[in-house]
Image 1 (cartoon, rainbow, N blue to C red):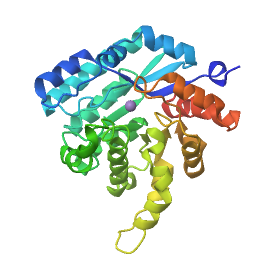
Image 2: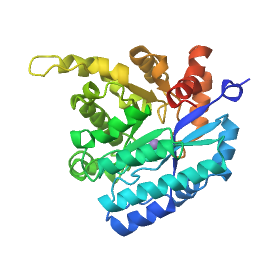
Image 3: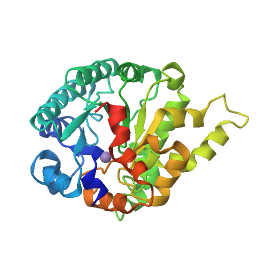
Image 4: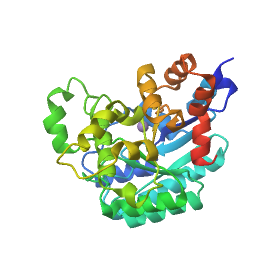
Length: 324
Ligand code: MN
């Protein structure tokens, strides 16, 4: 009997598209991403293939989040309204199938006070499990003190913030990636660029000392930690060499961060996370529909780790963190 069919499985980085947000992006931004129409229709649908593919692979619950860039590329006032509207939209979809869907709130980080209020509304009134930040907000990182109201509110509500990748800054795209983008479209995205952006944001958040002020803040990283578990020794060691202010990078990373399996189904990468963070900080995720459920569930089924650890990753840890 498959361990995924016989145990509760919660997949926590699974996406949807809200057609109203797409319209706002088309009307208010110049660099709207061109998406595969088949992918769009899969993400706009909350029944059909989504549920069939969950059932076929033993996934009981998807914790849904808007597809990147979320509302992060919209002008401030529009982003605040769009976040409220799409959180209401997702809450309505969740209420139609409450046993299968939960949600992360879209956050208008352009206005951190409004984003904090929206996170509180989404958690208290709409039953969301946390908030998600999708990479840069109009070309800015969200680690500075101006953004801290969101982290204060997350800690007060005891919900995590998921740092999801977004597009690299346009200058970074030009300098680092442009030469190979025509031939390798995903080089600046999921193949490498996203990880660099998200790992940088995570390191910046630690260096901002937000965790010294808000010690119970919980942050989630996808893709088995965006390379940081693999580099933890080196990052920590070099931040302790002369020339650096005192910072406990390893301690913060191991106490305040969680990682998910989204889109990184590698035995050695998972074992590295288990060694550095411990199994209690690893959560199951696919990154549907960018990744097929079956690719993740087949990998997980065959993994040579204990059944107890598998059950923790599949749902035990997320049930605890999200109080499901
Ligand atoms: Mn994703």
